[in-house]
Length: 317
Length: 320
Image (cartoon, rainbow over the protein chains, first blue to last red):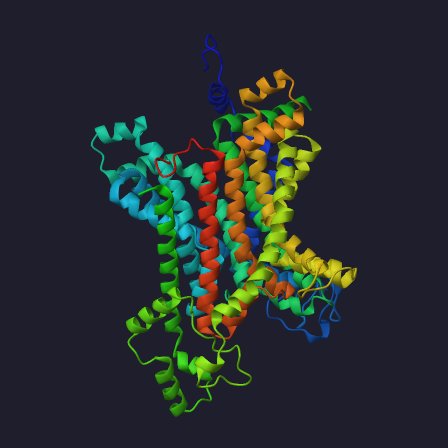
């Protein structure tokens, strides 16, 4: 309970509310926050479609149907097939291709972000916690690599190695781990002097254990926010690189590659370019919105505001 | 060592590492002589070229040779430019020096990136300041939505959509190419979308922090006009994050121009890079990457130094 004899600070209020507010209140607050709700639903839908593409896609991804070529969105083909988003120059259903393209685009983004986060956070936490020569080396590398033009380096490396899923993920790992390292190092610097780390040190914990079991859980929130943003960044870069022909290679289809293919028909079939681009746009937008939301609710002051606003609104109705 | 000097030396070292990396990695894609003459070349011609171009020397010797010539501004000759049909053996006579090709293309890229910046910086700052000065107003919501959209959109896709709308459907503007004012509008807008969003976001959040500080109340109490408080007092104090973001976005513009130039057939360095990559023209690839990397590194350096102007009390290099 809050001690009412002392003036209230927002954090006190938050602690007391946390006891009362359960899962239902969070759910209700999300439903009240239309924008976050939209973003969350979009991401969940994307995950469902990505995992269940084989069951959910209305057509075969490579099902050619030359009689139904270049049909605009919402048309019904000669065989009575319904094409929600139209068809491409080979009569393939665009909606189906988008779902299968999501598999590639999303998994490149997620895998690239996971690997860069693992490498970057490990390097950053160790540099921040240990300091000294290790910190100098890591931070020099981070500063140097951050000031390189990453798209250009990615283009060149993919030109040398050749495109494809694996190389793309590798390039993203090499060019994006620094973002995580820089943040993790800053967080570890703060944590090093905190009471809980000193308590752990005084109990004789080894440094590896302190970093993994004590510091990491405490700095997880900002890292997760950055991770969400990085997925969006990587999906956008993947689209750019694939569009230029240096990323995912056919017959794999990613959203960027679909835009590149549709570009030839841009005068006659705008939907071939418009929908893959919109898919990327809404994915990146949702991830950005979710990151903003996550940043707000992991901050005690802002979480209290967010919850109070939504739940009060509901009760007064 | 003074901070400025150390920073400059670091940048030069970074550039050297980049150039060396491109040099050695470029040798992994196969025989340069074969790349130059094409698959139809006779073994005799290949051998002659190797001798002329010094490709039989050990790699480290070629590297030292390359770096040595680089210091005099000579980055080699192109494999492709300057030849009518197939590259001649006598490269020195016929191939164009790559540095000239790159420098010829630079003004177009500067024009494009500059136009995008001229749109993005004032607009982004204005949007951010307006949103921060009227929090939770309609204007704030519109700015927040637009800036999120600008950050989330795929640049080249936006460019294609603009072409569909303004060139194909309405016929107001050309679909691409290099020319006067009307040619630069669509590519510059495409390139500006992201920086507008980023600059507006950063301006909004730093200005909100700044406008909540006590000195603003002091200024209001003195009777200073509102727009003067916002633009003269608060904006200057909020400048550091904004300038950092503008600098970041400027270097992003230089590389982002690669895609936009490709979409709009804009004859800048970006298009040159794509062309030279697709033709495996190694000297040209090396030179264009070196030039763009140098530009980006210089921009980053300038941003660092501009801190001094906005916050003289920051002692650069000590503590972070």
